[in-house]
Length: 428
Image (cartoon, rainbow, N blue to C red; front, side, top):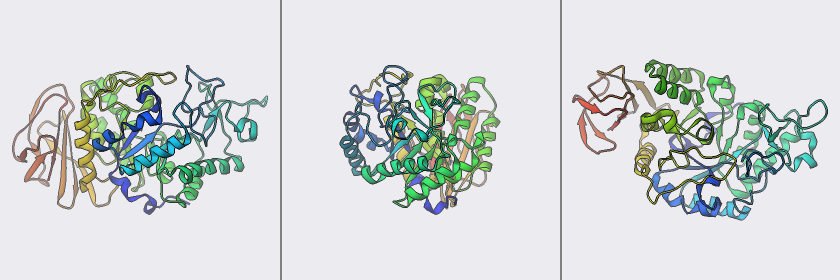
């Protein structure tokens, strides 16, 4: 069995994902407290709410004071720190009432040390030579490795996933470290779960890492390689060619129906490698524009709309300090709403073509067009620390365009000016 692209829900092509770090999102760190932000996120244009794991966290061998979301003690309960199962069901209902979708983080590769299966089904786990449980990799001491060679483990895992679909009405899963779990398990899980109703499947893997087959089991994957290359490009002042090479590589590696998520940060990056401003500096917003305009779907992390300039602690409480009106709310609102309604910005769509275009500043401006029929979107990013005046040189495009952010009308024959690390989005 392989994934047929006809199974991908139709709304996926124009969607976006917003990752919720529930523990840090509010002072209370609860589902009920987070629910107060839903109208704001709807107004910002958010389509999919992705909750980091909502399951209870193991106490044994936990790290920090609160432990890792990704060290669960049950697959079918809600972390009491976040609220009750009824609280979760209620927030799913609220999210759906606002016209948004909800997915949950699913950690299939490992559990915490005091997961209920360690007592009821110890045969579900891989063991050391002395019979003791063991972490999946050397420095993950707070979790233990599940054994997917056991058919009963596979069945139990799928049954647990079905619980959240049947009982809580979620719309899909973000599958943690998907490439560490056997590929055929995901095919099996997707076949059984999509039989309930078509779900959204986001897998944490990157085809640049040798994980190309996993694209046949998931709608969307990560773009870790792009994120690392773009960060290196900024910090080492490399040539634009390194960005082109990364994007060309993705095009060669993926099945046509498969979609990549583009992002400048997420929970791992923010906590361990630095905020988007530590990584990209003044280029952060230009790469955020890229994430929304290129052929893929954008992923936004909790607090990016503030903007957030601090690393959030992973194992301890570290509340996001919200303002009444986040400074970048309108920036993301403009991008997300526009992306939703414009046919040339649909991902993995055979009616959309994307190509790089030339300008009179080839060494500094990263420019491209996306077209569907007579509808076009032109994006120009100034990936340099200097202001540039330029003309667009491509005989395949021309005429009158509107500036997405200012609403001003432009003729493509005119001279444009972009400030350092500036961006321009034109459409017709």
